[in-house]
Amino acid sequence: MTFGFAPASAAASTSAAAANRLLEPAEWAAAGIPLLRNPREIVSGLHARHHPQPATAVVAVLDPDERLCASASFVRRSAPADGWMFRNALLAQLRRVIPHDLRRRTPVRTAVLLYCREGDARWTEEDGAWMWGLRDACTLHGLRCGAYITLTRDGWQVLGEGRGGRRPHSASAPEPFATSEAPPPIPRTGGASEVLRRAAAAR
Image (cartoon, rainbow, N blue to C red; front, side, top):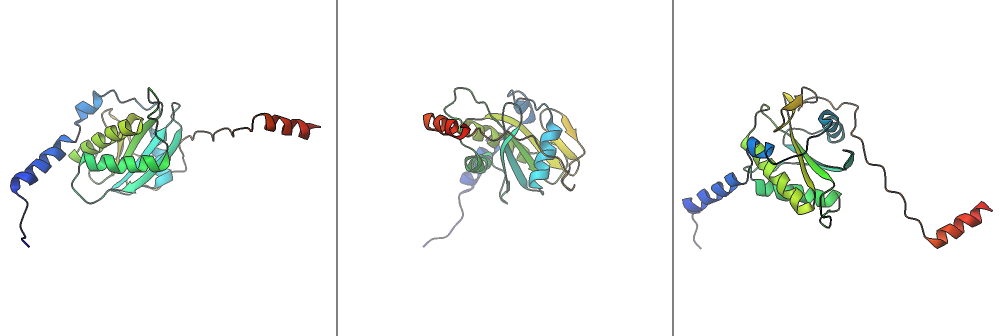
């Protein structure tokens, strides 16, 4: 059995591939990401629901009226930032909490990502990898790619838009505030038998 190290060229090609799986702020801004009507409401609601700590990602799906359909949070693995890995992690969470919309010709629901991290509000390569991962995961799940929001000690910020606020931040306690949720689906009736049952009950 022979032991050794991977060739430097292989490691370099892996790093180069990871570097390509990220989006710069200008690319993100030019991608036509839909603007949130009330980003503070979304941020406050997700913060109150998931209590994110640094290295926690919260992915949420919104309906056309920006009401919360589903959300999930998970802790980022301690590995180099790679959009492909982030895409897979986000896709796994989306598949767990909400059915895909791949049969629709045009996406109706929108996925947004809130990432709580250390450091200040300035863009990092890690943010770029999350942006790439979110965009790709949305494509594979039939969703519109929505906002990418960072939560740091400085507060929250919607990257690519320049909108943000001081609260909540990465160390603040959750506020008693929640995002609007979509109403539960209307129960399906039993057709003709249901009509007869109601008629009998009304006598």
